[in-house]
Image (cartoon, rainbow, N blue to C red; front, side):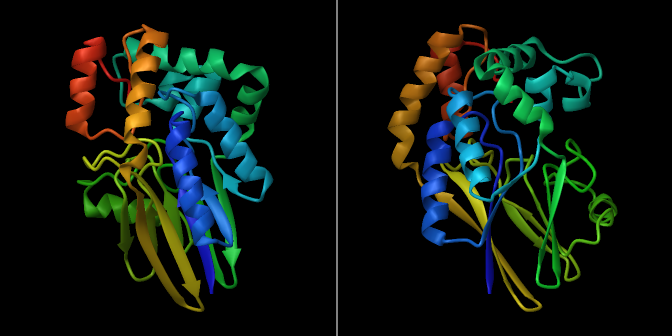
Amino acid sequence: MARLAVLSDVHGNAAALDAVRAAVRAARPDAILIAGDLAMNGPDPVATVDGVRELEAAGALVVQGNTDVAVADFDYSAAFPWFSDGVPDPFRAAAEWAHEALGEERLDWLRRLPAERRLWVDQTLVLLCHASPGSQTAGFDEHLDPTVVVERIARTDARIICCGHTHLPEVRDFGWQMIVNDGSAGYIFDGEPTASWAVVELDGDEVRAEIRRVEDALRQRLQTDVRVTARRLGRGFVTISYFSNDDLARVLELILGGPFAG
């Protein structure tokens, strides 16, 4: 049997990444897959990128997400194509701050990341991408029309599609193909104060996948991170963290009174 660990959407939340890395180590996977969106919006893009690079040096597969494009090269139309009237200022500010913090060597590494990676596990092909096969921005949204979902998974022959982007963890098994969306190892959008990642187990023709959560033991530390980052930035946006949506709204109101660059 082979075991894969899948994580994504850390968004500069180094504390959350540390917690997920500890959980992944305990699971003892045969391979680690990281589906992008690494640096933008969090309190510590440098430590986050360095942590991911440590995993890559140990054999992890890493791909680039849409916000990685924004941070590395300010190509906002490519990173956020749904903003037809222009990308809001908080998004630009978040990307520029992470860009400045990372420095040129780390930015070059972000630029070199591929959009997709493939892994053969015996006779099973696994695709790692950020949003969906062939796209860093068109994800498997919760309310996406089923015909569009089928069209998107048909862009690959891979039996297993490992992705993120939506920040909503889920496993969808179509029989002939499976979508494993690990959610987010930085800030999850389903209201749970946790970080999420996924385990995929392959045993011959049998494939099993489950979402795992890192509980909020680091919540107090992350609350401190938000306040420190808010003071540090002073630019009208706030870090991603473990907070639930209601918690984050209260933090925004109390600390910044400004928008969240998600």
